[in-house]
Amino acid sequence: MPHAFLLHLTPQTKAAPQRYLSKYAHGFFYHVLAQIDAELSARVHALKRNPFTLWAKAHKDGSVYLRVTTLDDALFQPLIRTVLAESLVGMSLGQDSYQVARVLATPEGHRDAGFTGWDDLLAVGPTGQLDLTFLTPTVFTTSKPDGAKAHYTPLPIPRLMMQSLLSSFQHYSPAPYSEPELLELERDFVQQLIVTRHEVRTQPVVAGKVAFTGFVGRSQMRYQGRSQLVAQALARLGCYAFYAGLGAKTSFGMGQVRVRL
Amino acid sequence: MPHAFLLHLTPQTKAAPQRYLSKYAHGFFYHVLAQIDAELSARVHALKRNPFTLWAKAHKDGSVYLRVTTLDDALFQPLIRTVLAESLVGMSLGQDSYQVARVLATPEGHRDAGFTGWDDLLAVGPTGQLDLTFLTPTVFTTSKPDGAKAHYTPLPIPRLMMQSLLSSFQHYSPAPYSEPELLELERDFVQQLIVTRHEVRTQPVVAGKVAFTGFVGRSQMRYQGRSQLVAQALARLGCYAFYAGLGAKTSFGMGQVRVRL
Image 1 (tube, rainbow over the protein chains, first blue to last red):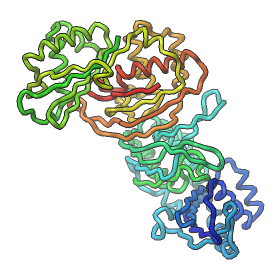
Image 2 (image 1 turned 90 degrees about the vertical axis):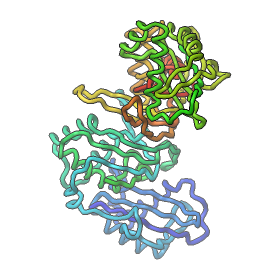
Image 3 (image 1 turned 120 degrees about the vertical axis):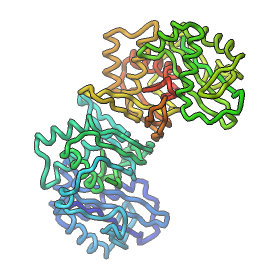
Image 4 (image 1 turned 45 degrees about the horizontal axis):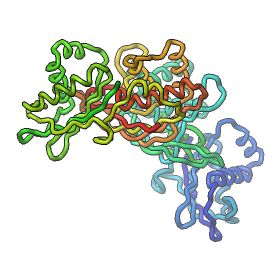
């Protein structure tokens, strides 16, 4: 089942501002993976699609909130266990050493934490509307017809949002959509989803060491069609978005969202 | 040549707030046209594409600024002449009677007024970037594959913006693009224009008597290709946008923009 949890990391010494925080968080995460199992770390690193998202946010007091979501069912338990064990000796983000002061794994602990069983996620009722709040810069990669250079689109275009979620869902869900279902979904994502309201603006971000321009803000979309399959997919993918994030570089803090059905 | 001018209308009596101001402005405009020539008014009314845009903005003091742009070369002179002549007897917007206090027809008089000769517009140098400020709610009509219901897209998608401008330009320019040029333009509008920065939000609006949701704000796009034809079209259509407006219902105040190349 998809999980989202936050690690509150406090510096063991006076920490320097972290210019490449998202890159260091990435390194931290793979370090933890390597503690679980060196082979696991190498395997996850080699995957084309990350089974996790990472968002590191520095606070004024020098502490860091690291939001981790896991999409692969096998990842959460060993991750938490290892983080807690490692925490005692301290872990590094860039050049500074941190301790895990708290782990927040439920919505009661933090609004951006929680978990949803696949059964619950798959059983969610249909919806005609999705309301997304983009907490961190979000951008969609759209390959060009000639396949040469990637296009980055920093706009809440419903088709791009849903295609991004669907592609991840198909990879991790125990009950992915069938080919005929996919055809129906993709057709309606293009033809029947409209933006009803939004308030967005671009924001530059460094993901890893690369500069991107994503958008933050809020966007609401409505489904104008009549297919129950699509209306349910909207709800499922909406729930899933909280864990999977949207668009590019979700393992470097981009595309993190809150969702209201 | 395309013109943009503002009529500052002051009420002759204490005016009531105008709920359907854009509709009344529309009526006012056709009334003026009918004074020039009843046949002209009927002919313009019957056109599928309006050779003008209209934007009426009420001020707190009860006066109204009416921005009029004309795309058809034959429209400007008789329009101004008739407005000034009619002004002496007063003209109605809805139930109230107004006088034309001022006509602002140059950028010195008002930043949203001005004119550009077709020769100058066609001779403008190429640009790699367009910066548009959407003063009034803007929405693009995108017909669906089945042709049934219209889609309205309230987002600054470069392809939709340029296609809207190009289609109007082709209609009014004395030197429209040829078929092979159009193919090149349309290909690059889809593949080579990217949004580099934006800050936009939706805003509801009543255009005529129909409610729409458009977006206002600012959006910057960049051309990534190498075609001189496209880079020049970007500049021409950018200049033209100031007069033509973008998207749907420009004769009811929507899609009014300021442009920076």
